[in-house]
Length: 364
Image (cartoon, rainbow, N blue to C red; front, top):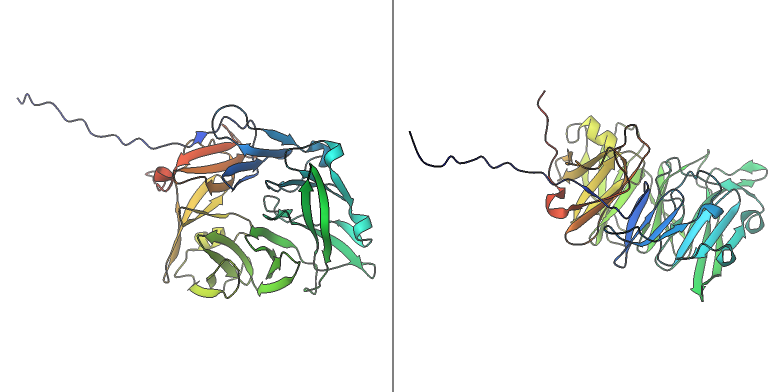
C-alpha cells in the first residue's frame, strides 16, 4: 500500500460573464467612444457608463419618444437624438431639458413627408450620428401622390455651443433606385460614411450626403482593424454562393476574398450569417456574430467558413444585442429582457482571455 499522497485531478473552472451592476435594465446596444462607454435602453442613454460600482448616469429621453419605440437610440458623445410621429428632437449630450431640445418638424422640412422609415429589425441603427455630429435620419415621402419606393434621408450637420444645438447645414437625399417599395435592412456607421443596405442593394452615404451604390447585393459589414469586411449575397434565401469582400476604411475598391457554396459553408451557418441584422462585431481582430442568446466566432479561409459557438454562461438567457471590446483585457455585451425565462439582463463583462472558449458539447 503506497503512502504517497494521491494527486487530485485538476478541475477547470470556466469563467462566467459577470453582470455589470451599474445598469438596472435591459440594453439595446453599446459603443465605446474615445475611451468612454455609452449604452442605450428603450427609454434613454447611459453616458460615460461604468461596468462596476454604482449606477451609471442615465439620460431619460421618454419626453421625446412617446411610447414604445420600434428603434434603438443612437449613441454619441456630442448629441442625443430621438424621433416621434413627425418630429426629430436633438439635444446636447447630457441634457434632457425640453428647453435645450432643438425640435424639427418633418412636415415643414419636407411637405411630402409621410412618416419615418423604421427598419424591419428594430435592433439596428435607426438614426445615424457620426463622430463630427452629422445626423442621418431615414424617412418616407410621396411623389405625385404615391409613396416613393426608395426611402429618403434627412442629413443634418450640427454644432453644440454653450449647451445649445445649431444646424449648420441641412440636406434632403431623395433618390429613386427601386421599381417597388424597398425597405432598409441595415444602417451602420463607419469612420467616413454610413453604409445602408436597402433590400438587394447596398449604398454608402458620405458626410456631404452623396449616395453611392457599393454592392448590388444584400450585405452587412464590420470593421476589423483597418479593413472593412463585408458578407454579401443576392438575396436572404438565395441559393447562390455566399461572398466575402474586404476594403480599406473608405469602403471603396472592395476585393473578393472568398466565395462559399454548400460545400464550403453549412446550411445553418449560412442562415445565421445572412440574417439582415446589425449582428457582427470585431473582438481582438476576430469577427463575432450574435444570435438570440448565443455568441459565435466566425472562422474562415479561402476554402471554408464556419461558426463556432462560444461559452456564454452567466448571461441569464437574455437576448444579446451587442458585443464590443472595451480594452485589451475586457469584452462587454448587452442584453434585453425580451425572452422567456430571463435570469438577468443588461450589461455583462468577460475577459478576452476566456471570451473565445468554445461552448462544450453536451453528450447525448
